[in-house]
Image 1 (cartoon, rainbow over the protein chains, first blue to last red):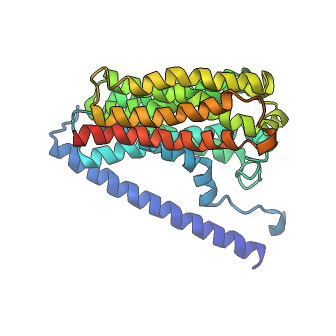
Image 2: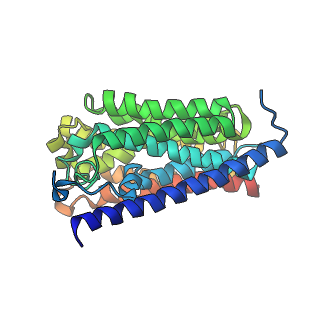
Image 3: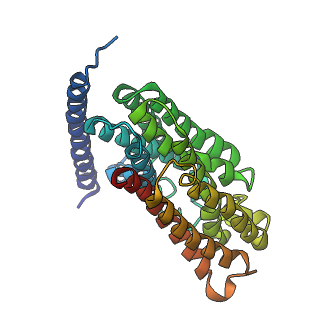
Length: 44
Length: 298
């Protein structure tokens, strides 16, 4: 593999990992919001 | 600039390594047990988020520790393969990652649970980075005695996340981890003394010698044992925890005594010291597991 191909492969791996982390966080924050609303959380 | 001179970007596994996942395991477990031992049940999603925040906060502290100590880590055999000394990541990346993760963990903790839990989480990250890593560690052999407080916060955070307040039991669990840290770390320091000496870190065996360290391990085991067993006679836990604590602590004391009453470990390659270090990790898992078992089974 050439250095360029190695860089590209590494960037792709990192992008996939980042996308996975962000996806999980979005789901978690949704679940958290639903849980807080269920417990009667009002903002302010 | 040719493409050959461009370094590969740091891999996601390097960022994971920056968070010290093995240390995080114990932190998460003690935090979870602090939460499960609380008398008020917590919503599972909120509880999961709180534990995640404790893990992220610990990861942030670990990353900032490695950012600050990159040059020291390069001098020690045990740590020279870490992402920064190995040249797989820039110091700026580590700093940004650590600060970002720390701020995110505190904000999420505040939103998910309460200000008390978020406040203690903030204090634990700042304590580990500024008091332990930057101030104490390079200056005094008492570094891990006071710095041990940083690792003792998770049970308090877990309890605070569930209840919004503190109570004598989580404070005793804090004291247990705080007093457990010196014998745990000094057992390690005895068999990696050369590493610490090469890096110029004033760990107790380097500064005061092996005999003084062995004595200190024995001495610190006494208040640690008191803190471990105290919840039972004080009526904060029942007999399940009490008997487990008595048995596990007696074994800890026996291993510590073996180390205290010998002058050198050169002839058997420090086997008893390595045994105490390994058991000390299991010991915390056993005791915190027993707190939860006592709360849920009694």
